[in-house]
Each structure stands twice: as C-alpha cells, then as structure tokens.
Length: 143
Image (cartoon, rainbow, N blue to C red; front, side):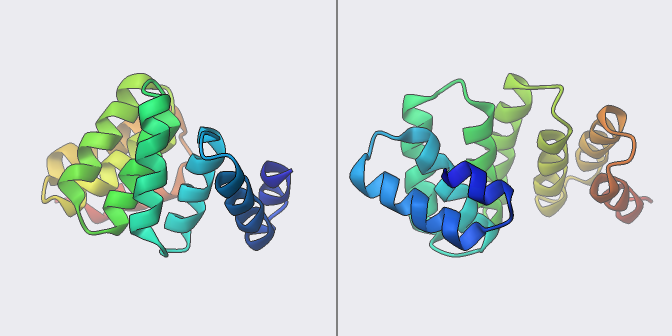
C-alpha cells in the first residue's frame, strides 16, 4: 500500500506507512530502503536514512537500488567521495539504468572530476537520449 500511495504522489502518506512498517518489522528491508529514499528526497533525517539504507544493504548486498539510495544520502550529506563509491556499485550491478549513471555523474562533478562526470552523464544519455537532467549536466560540464 505504501508503494502505491507513493506512486500516486502521496509522499507524506507513504512516509507514514513506511515508518509504521519499519517500526513494526525492522527486517522489512524494502520498506526501510524506500523510507530512506523518501527521507533523502525531503533532505531530512539523513543519518536515520543512512542507517536504514545500510541495514537494507546488509540484507540485500546485490541490490543496485539500495546502493543508489546510499549514494544519494551521501550526496545530500555533502560526502561526494562516498557517494561515488555507492553509485559505482549501483552502476556495476545494473549498468543499463540511466538514473544510476546520472547519479554517478552528479557525485563525480561534486567530487571535482569533470571528465569522469561527463563520461557518466554521456552514458546516461546514451541509455535514455531524452534524459533532461543528464543533458543539462553535460552542458554545464562542457569545456
């Protein structure tokens, strides 16, 4: 139900549902990861989000989605080097996902690696030619 209401754009309702699930069932790793994602989207409770996502990663070590969540949290916490490592794992596990390449590009740009950022953004655009955010990043990292 939490996933459904989130997909309907009812983030606050989804957050409450995920919080209830995680409080009742601490081993509900998908719910924990999804709650961590919402926290980072709202740029709130980033330490709690990281704890939730890292617990999910311990139980789902092959999950590209969980690594992406961890990367976004580190990115929001202004820890781009740690974000790069997490995003590299998500790209490695799911190389066909343009969002993971774009997120990697963001972290690389923030880490002061414009050449690698451009390469990651180019890969995102190759996978999704109309990826507006990646195209914008490419334009910003020109020259």
